[in-house]
Length: 68
Image (cartoon, rainbow, N blue to C red; front, side, top):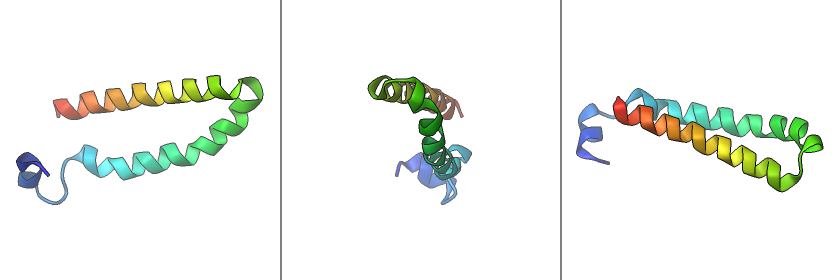
């Protein structure tokens, strides 16, 4: 834990508190997306697109978290 995070107390920033909820949201929608996407895409292309979109979303999140 960095000194800045320790100075904010145990709650941390809003971004840090939101991480568990975002993880559960992403994890729980994986089955639904796979069920509807797999009939229309080859497996490796489907995974590549899914991971690319995840990287973009997390990149935006990291950029926003650094600004705050």
